[in-house]
Amino acid sequence: MAKPLLAGNWKMHGTAQSAATLAGQIADCAAEAPDIILLPSFVCIPAVIAELAARTNISVGAQNLCQHAQGAYTGEVCAQMLADLGCSHVLVGHSERRALFAENNQLVAEKFAAAQSTGLTPILCVGETLTERQKGLRLQVVKEQITAVVDLVGLQNVCRAVIAYEPVWAIGTGETATPEQAQEVHAYIRAQLGEQGIPTPLLYGGSVKADNAAALFAQPDIDGGLVGGASLEAEQFLNIAQQMVEQK
Ligand code: 13P
Image 1 (cartoon, rainbow, N blue to C red):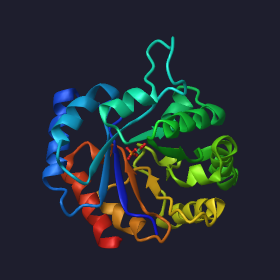
Image 2 (image 1 turned 90 degrees about the vertical axis):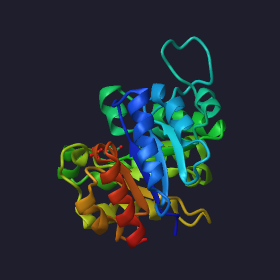
Image 3 (image 1 turned 135 degrees about the vertical axis):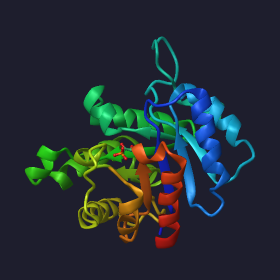
C-alpha cells in the first residue's frame, strides 16, 4: 500500500504573495494531514518554498517542465531549475497540457525522463476524454499513456513515480467519477504496473471536493488525490486532507 498523498494543483492562479499566504494557511493546520504536495505556478514557487521553510510534511512541485536539460528554448523551464528552487515533484502530462498545448505521449515520456534524471519525482497524469469513455476506450487510452513512458524509461522507473488518474471529463466540471468508475481504472493501472516491489501512489483527480472525497479515498486502489479548484482554499483542501486521514 502506497503512502496516502494529497496534491494541490493551483494551475494559473494567484500571485507570489497570495500563494505564500495559502501555503502558510495550509501548513498551519496540516500537522495531522497526510503527505501534501503543493503545485503553484512557476513564479510563485520561491515564495511558497520560503513560506514553508522548516515545516515538515509539505513538499512543493511544479506543474510542468521542459523535456530538454538546457539550451536555447525561450520561455521554458528545465528540471534542474526546479530542483535548484527546492522542488521535489513535477506534474507531467496534465490533460490541460495535452489538450491545450499539444503534448503527446512521446513528449510526456520525455518530460518524465527529464524530471527523473534530475531527481524530481514526476506525477504522471493520465485519463480519457468523454468521447473516449463513451466509445469504451477508457482503459486502452490510459494503457497507451502509461506504455509510452514505460517504453522510454522502463517499468521500474515508472513505478518510482506517482500516477494520477484524471478523467478529462471530470476536471473542473463538477462532475466527479463515481468511486466505482475511479476504482476500476486505478485497479487496471495497478495491474499494469505489476509487482515491482515499489508501491506506486495512485492519485485520483477530477472535481475532488470535501463532500465526495471520503467515498473516493475509501476505494482500495485510490491512494490519494490531485485536487484543482478545491485546493485554492485552505479550509476546503484541509477538509479533503482530513477525509483522507479518516479513510486511509
Ligand atoms: P479540479 O479539481 O478543479 O477538477 O481539477 C483537477 C485537476 O486538474 C488537478 O490536476
